[in-house]
Length: 447
Image 1 (cartoon, rainbow, N blue to C red):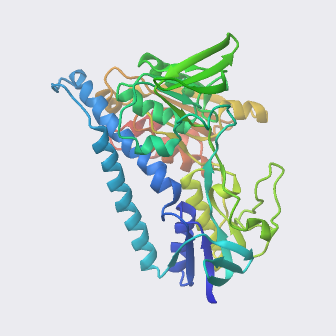
Image 2 (image 1 turned 90 degrees about the vertical axis):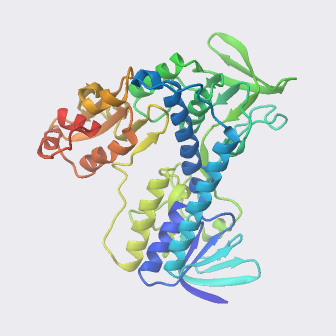
Image 3 (image 1 turned 135 degrees about the horizontal axis):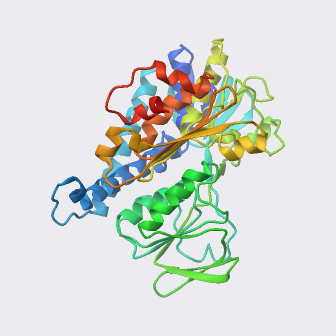
């Protein structure tokens, strides 16, 4: 039997952050991971998709270089090499995570961990004892019960990430973040794309006004959108897959070479003995945790996608930090007030804080302040013929409640807005800060 102060189950963003932080604090740590350290985010999610999207963005820029008075003769791409570059970057970053864990004397155990109780874990033939346990098993792809889904060669994000042949056409079932990012990627490569979404707008949870603007932009680029549309079955055809659907206009079908199922993710709760802990659940059926990420069982913490609060890698990292801080006695608490969300399409969309819909549902008084990103000279210089918007929602006392951006580089700007929301700052306080000129971030000062 092996004894450790901290046992971490799952080596994704929450798990490796918790293990590294606990090791840095001088605790003995064992980390269990059945696949690759880095989890879904590093191996088959955040990093791989952004690598592909950046290649597509470079190709897009080359194709439209004439807008910037630059001549590029017959731009082309090599999907096989794009995929190879993605794999190389993933390997490099995984090695980096392992090196950081090794530097903190974290023991990594490759295999499936089975929880026996709050202080006992079995893996293979070994039994491990721990004083505290941090469970970070992440999430898994949710496949909807569409008739025919098992008989057709549909893609999930995994197959799409490793595919080395450009499909003749693509249907994306689900207009969420993953669906739209892959729609963006393949649209940039010249593939005809159809997006089928059950609700009335793509990117549920994102500010509706910006989602509609992004959809309109991709519609101009040739992406076909079917909203308020339900897929009823999938059928094999001689040339690919037929997606049969129904909406207010009746039944229809979309024939394409490939179909990508992007119906979201759900917490991974099966197969590792979680039920042996008998944890208290929320009304929605998720594991209940307090502001320190501790469950109803003393000494057991749940971080990341498993608790079902915010299925985002950066949320998982922060939750892991909070959990370890609580274990070592450092005052800290988790706040979800300013968790940013980013869609890495081209242009990018980024949001933080409350949306108009959320404020209306909560009965909160607010006003919306909008500015075109064209108020930024840097944006105009680098985005020929492209529009962008900065939308800020403020309360009656001008406190910033939500910020929503459409345009590049929204992903790099949104953190400034998140800090304002987290600290309860007022809109006028942006005037106190000196922004370098010219930058797109100056848009906040212009507000």
